[in-house]
Image (spheres, one colour):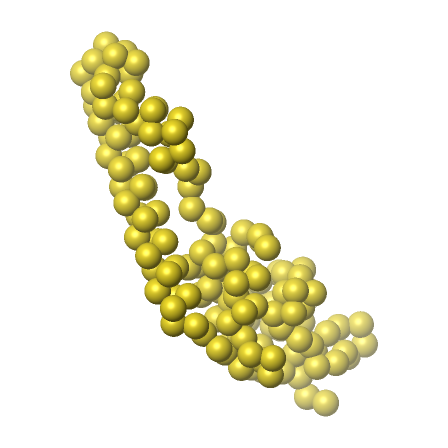
Length: 144
């Protein structure tokens, strides 16, 4: 059996072996056997890991990424899901731009106190109402 051991896959993919083991637990990748105590992977695992990295960078959860593979392991990427994620990113970009502009204004505002600045107060009300939420998903962060 020829395969790439987990250390080499980790090196080539730029991921820790623990992430590879986690991805295997989640069913995102599969080892093809062992050489001693080390898992072995088929060389196509590198392409699959690249697809997973792209999905994570776009903000997809690991569960969403898992749905992008057919039972035989071949990519099955739903174009409607990609369009929906692009729309979601557009909304995130708009919110982040508004936050950036508000922060820039607050940093340069001539008001004696931020609490006296109408723009800063609008930004606070927007945050309190939920119109401005926590930042975007961090690529590489492990979430389900």
